[in-house]
Length: 514
Image (cartoon, rainbow, N blue to C red; front, side):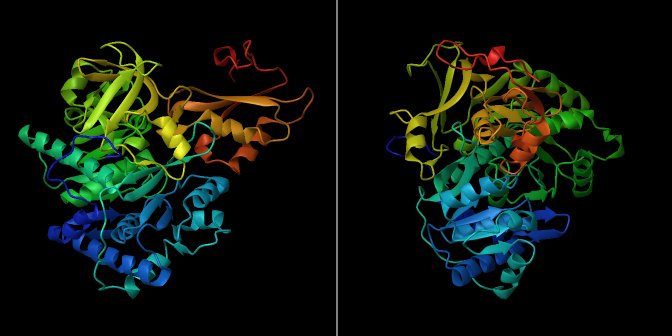
């Protein structure tokens, strides 16, 4: 792959479309469940075939074209994803929390043939020069108009692009991590192997119902849940709307959810919630990922949910890795609460020093990843792709950690990266937008501890002496340009210059925080 010999599963599928084609074998078993729609595997296949036909015949979508989805989680999001893949086209999972300029950047970079968006995002896409189909009306209409059409036939190679997902940029512009069919099939097989191991341990694998609450423009929801359930025949129960712990707990009770992959903020709200009002006896397994979680939080979760806690695991991964790069089993977490586990099959992990040399066991360095899970590269950004890769095919994560007896520990995530509720915020991106405000002379954005979100975004902004600009002014300015979760919630507006060293670099540790 990409010029390097890598370990692969021998009997794997050669494209995601193979899973879709086989899915009617699951018959009336439920695939997608939401508060307003329930789809069996058979009905889902019928609707996907109709939608794919409509995209091809009415909008000219062909192999290699991009179809952008800009919407909150719905069954229509998932159906559009599968319909796009069945044409050999590429799904662009747009950050649905993005502001208008961020959406415009995504469209400019990927040049989609058609956009599928819900009402809220269509307002932000008013200037798009390609058709914008509504999730609420156009998608159902197209499905009914072409109901009965067969699934299109298309030849897809393993290394053809399947999905583009955006990752916040260290230099201020989000990049499009491009995943191939090979990447995503490898992610599915990682879960297939986990199931085989779980079966050997006597864990029940039948009648599983997975809570889908993370955004579908994340690998946690798309690669690790929607795609995997299609291959295995499990149910994805979709929580629609903003995360609300009581609504989620009610959904778990109503739909008898068995498995939940959460981010730490969700877990912290879970352990603080009054769960006595809900019947959560169906919940068998909880896993955590997307951001660091403390041993204390994990211990509180196990205490509150002893049954699910027995199967509690954690992973380490990033958008570029398609799925978890490491996995810690319940036994491994019990032995070492700070570990994020061993490398998953077909994935290699190394710790290297600044010169690129592998360091001994227990020594801290930068985490490097290599394997068939790793992305093809950043869409139309060869410079960023080259800068992120070594000559021998290793991806430089920018995260710091160490290996001890084959287990990975994380020291810090991507230098200045802020992880707020599982969402990545790069200070450079926020600082670049703040720098566009006419009153801002200089600024710095930092992460600070937050009991609910893990980290909060804070900003120190320097303006001229006597300038009347307030934090509210700056917040309103950013709200028009950035996703809300990137906008600082803690501010210090001052006329004092930022502390700098002899080379002019800001000394971040000496900055007086809000």
